[in-house]
Image 1 (cartoon, rainbow, N blue to C red):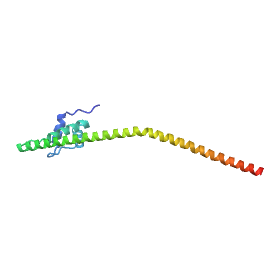
Image 2 (cartoon, helix red, strand yellow):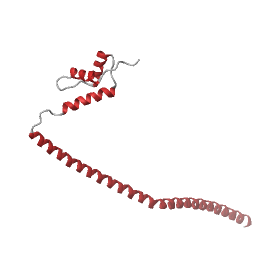
Image 3 (tube, rainbow, N blue to C red):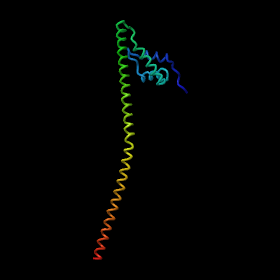
Image 4 (cartoon, rainbow, N blue to C red):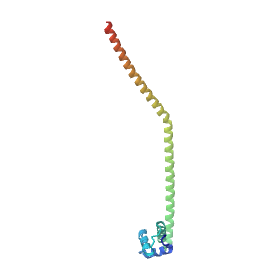
Length: 154
């Protein structure tokens, strides 16, 4: 069975009842009061959306004077200037890092052949080291044979 449906109007009236001064109730306390009164807590998303609507209505000042309008207009202009500056900084930042990434990609592309050559040189050096070791072993064996032949013949 689905719990009984509570209308937005009923929820808004309950929010008004639970509001103390300018402090509206928390979502959890509103949902608990809904459960006590209507037997349904209501959907979390729906309850917090309605609370946000009430908060937004409370934050709008009711008595605005000419001085407030001028001050608000000045504040709006300064915020627009700050936004333009922040946007410019972000674009500059993005451009700088795009150029840096591109530079590093080019650097990697130029160093890749060098890395391959270095790997080939290391492989060649390892092969030559093994050949040198084999040559020393062969020299030692031949010297031993020569010494043995001299000892027998001499």
